[in-house]
Image (cartoon, rainbow, N blue to C red; front, side, top):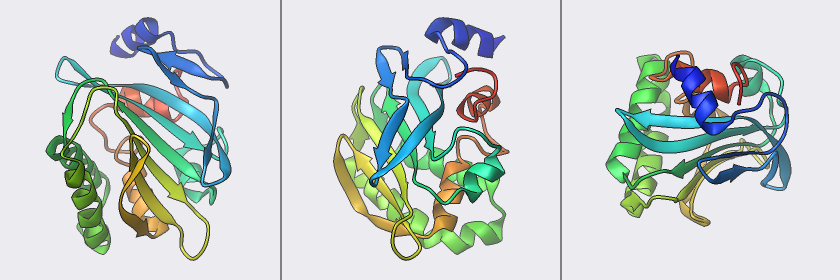
Length: 193
């Protein structure tokens, strides 16, 4: 029922193409580190009864399961647009909780230092105003590739190395253990966009 309500409220359409939700456009194709990435899905995340943020997942190819998404070596993007002011603590806690839900203790410990780098970069921003755009990009070029955080067009913190880190990060929203399964399905292109 909740998924149907979201689909009706925001006019999700299946298949490829640009879309708009709550006045925010999600382009069909974006450039991530000089590579094209395609919109796989986008949806609304609510916290309690409040509209917290919109999120879109961009990938080198639209088709595929989460495992296929992670195996694809091309550029990727998670685009988050705040629908209300979001405190840095809430953002970093959301990421921490999602990582702990989707990773074993050993896998979390392997990336813990890099999680702390991301946390510091988020906290340096203090808060994201309503309408702020947060990008979490996977840039595969050179070496092992890096994760880059950008807030309103400004890179925050240093690039974080390692594909394993981005794989863990991406699971926070479309991973197997999430708080919002209908949003996960939308991001993965199942059940509308």
